[in-house]
Length: 213
Image 1 (cartoon, helix red, strand yellow):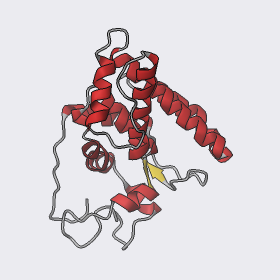
Image 2: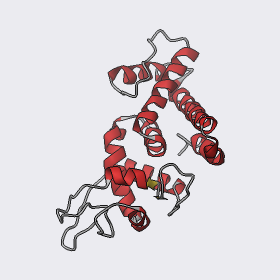
Image 3: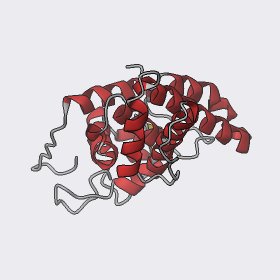
Image 4: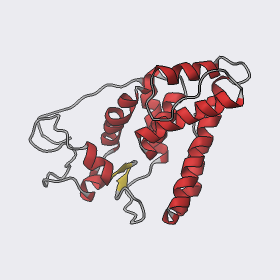
């Protein structure tokens, strides 16, 4: 963070520490691929996202904390200067806490986190609702299907609990259905935008790993 006389310390749960380390094992170093819709990227942080989230000034020095070269704006040069510590700080603040990931049973919180980072918060939440609906249908439960709106409230949690309570389903059913929903989303992106097809194999591999660690 900027500022010679300021140190920002933020604690996080062991669960987040494990999840973010797993995430950083997937997300690479600095890449500036013109086909990548998010722009220059490092540790999974795209220029587009950093511009949106990096304008905070927690150290009070008058500069956006993630204007790392302190030139008055956030651009590709700032993405290149991101450290792993910076990335972890942002992931905790901008994704883990906003998802309330610690409140979700393992590995749901971790899957939401991964897919929120990769595809956006709303998309990740909708994947969970689709996974729950698929499980409710598969196991013929009487619980009403969820509205897929990306709002994870009491109805979503209750519907998930209903699936998990069925011995033949359990948490495994939700995890498998979430993977399938993520794969469907990736395939739809590639089908809609042929320039993204080059990323599809990696995306599908990522989806297949959800909930396994």
